[in-house]
Image (tube, rainbow, N blue to C red; front, side, top):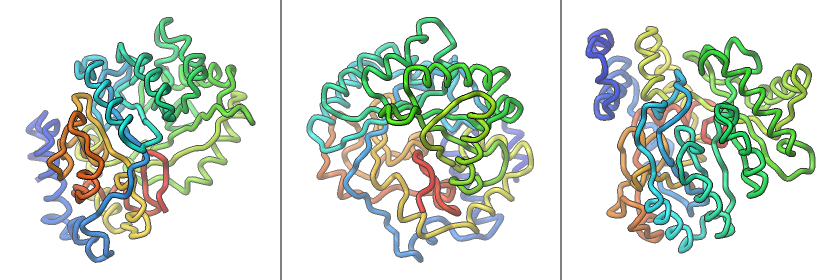
Length: 349
């Protein structure tokens, strides 16, 4: 079945097709329980949201990198970019909500032409801004060289992906020269105070495995990264988040092409952890697509799984109505609930 799917080429770019592939492998081939059944057995289905604390906004799929694991399928050729009008709708929603943190993501969010304006306007509302920066954007072009100072001015929390503390593993996942550029960018962030003790400027790193396996213990990985980056490069940071690769988009394509698909899905399903499932980020996060569509999480967004609510666009934001919804789940959700769990903020259990 998997070989025939691979032969169809770009069908894996289609979200409905990806969902079909995921269900067939878990239910029909491996004969394992569908995700909703595991959740029901754990007393968590239907999964309900709590009061949202984070508005995660994808401001566009354009990126200066083409990473092998990217669930957004981002790259330099992507044209989906959030407009200032849609950003204003997000600001209007924030103004009428109690959400205190705005998590800006992409692509490379800094490549949106209205990125800086958006950060400034969010800051005026008194909300915390978090930016998922790929690091290399800082040194990609001189127009981005001042990003560390801009981030500092607005007390932006910077969260950056760094697959490993060596060039080999990092470049294999993210492209030649990415590790060297990432080190340059980290030094620039450190130079203005990011990650430094008592600076108040938060710099967190994200680790995700480079192959078809789950991450090791987050605390141990953080110790390894801190020791290696300080010793070899003089770099400091605050925390490290260990994130499980979700089987969608480019990573799903990699799993199938490498013959690791069935094994990886079985690992995720058999490692299902009710404690991790209870703390998944979709319960307290609302995700906004580049066009203003509303989703329970960034992964659902990439699979076109809108929120199960009449309120499906940020222009119609209604906190009370959204609080009544059930969170949309599917087989890819095993990635966030396996082992210690996974979220944009690391482990969940």
